[in-house]
Length: 314
Length: 302
Image 1 (cartoon, rainbow over the protein chains, first blue to last red):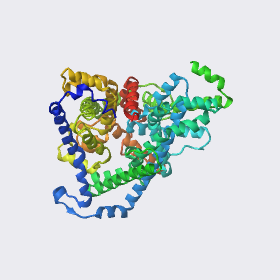
Image 2: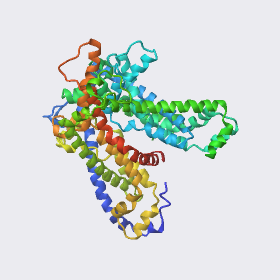
Image 3: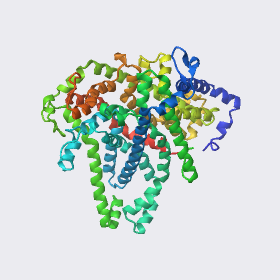
Image 4: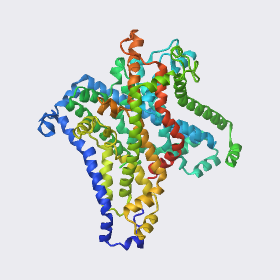
């Protein structure tokens, strides 16, 4: 960016040799970081080989027998895995859509507030849940949706229900509950970036619209939403890969024996096979499948955004 | 203020309707956010037997602190609290130093491997080995069944580096140049020139990492399941809650409660939940002004 501006006389004075010498300390430190990165981030990538092997600890990564795509074939003929992929994608899409919509709506409504103090207060309250752990949040959600909880109480008092429902013993409520938990936890937090974008929209646009007699709704529709467009697209590309990453903690913590058919995600499957049953090859194959899908989705959406002339990630 | 008065003239009936609806909506939003937390707080201070009847909302019906006594007398919770405080303090300070130093290096405009070093770390954001390869690696390194598994593996994070780097790049070059003219080396520039200017973004990253440490439980379950001395607070809370969550479905539908597992009373669960989130709620108002500036400068700028 400002690389050219920085060539002030002060920087030019140093000969290349002196600069290399000055940088030697940086080089040594950078080398240590690279070693750390190779060990903790790049070495596990070699572990992907396990997905194509019948991995045995005693034989090691390079002594185990290669079996090609055997485990992937096993996965897709396993009814449990197919169901787990369905659950993951369903919850992933539900989460992405509900979180994006609520965050944008909340950001727009909050940006319409003129009272500075009230706005600050609402915003401060809104991102508090982001900092609570999933354990705490699921504990709260579980209490709220229990038969004696507030949700049932409100629904019964409004005569929407005649008697309390046991939400956690019927499979059809589980996905919406997961989506609601995510919305409760993250709406305020996700809205931060949209709020920042809205505040960077030129105020002159709103003034001009007001001169033309535009009301609040028209201003939102014709100025705010188009102004958010590129931010929305960038965030969608960044988050689309997470559709297959629907999460693990909520489902693991809120699920119970009755809900297994809808609550289990790929990560829980990996945990059951890879850690519980010590079948490392199947666990790695399932994990690799997940990474593959998420990378494909990111590149695909990036490509579409490029074609339609929108903002893109890379 | 005068902005408001100017608006008043133009406000039509629809605009007023919008303002009223919007205010009602935002108040509802705050209630929905705060009520579950306050309700849990009310339960935690209620008498255990009385709480079973339900119907407690914002205030305890029969005040008691027994639930907290039970929670704080649990050996696991005490040990978990010590480990959690230790990992949060040590882990977040170490992570800040380590990530800030790396961000400083990749933000130096004349550093020769600047872009390749950045790329090296950006790749780690997208490609990861997954749960099993990482587990096996940590086992082979002897990090499982130890306290250090909480600190070492996640120490360097590409996301934090990006946030720090963007902030450091936004600082004027002139600071570095004048220090350099005075004969300061890179480390001196990092410690005495750049770091003092980075306080807001340092606070942001410190907050992120500290909250992450405080809230994590999965690493305790996965790597230190057999080491009760390295348990964490959240993992203890999870164990406390899981018996209830697992049962809620089966008990309601089939009408049979498995009497073998001890169900933790609702007041104790609430007290444990509140105790676990308390430090975050206390520190949050002080820190929140930093992270918004840190985030918007670090994230949106590009």
